Length: 83
Image (cartoon, rainbow, N blue to C red):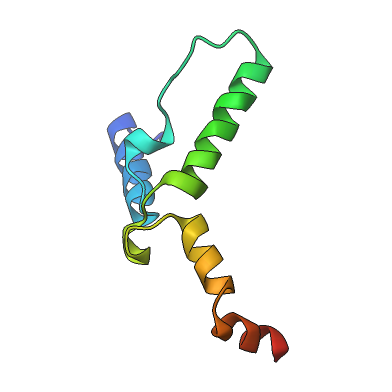
């Protein structure tokens, strides 16, 4: 017996929340897209926003890219690499 739609939607929302995302962040249509290239560009723009612009609470409300850069600029990162 197939799962009711509302139950599937709730499971997807719970999964996204567990990953620190809101449903709105996953899909915001910018279309209509005229082809595959437009969809690829929209996807690349979203990935760039997700990695470079998004403020991530568990990291102190800085972007993941900023957190990664500051990690690799510390002495601790050099000590890990030397081991």
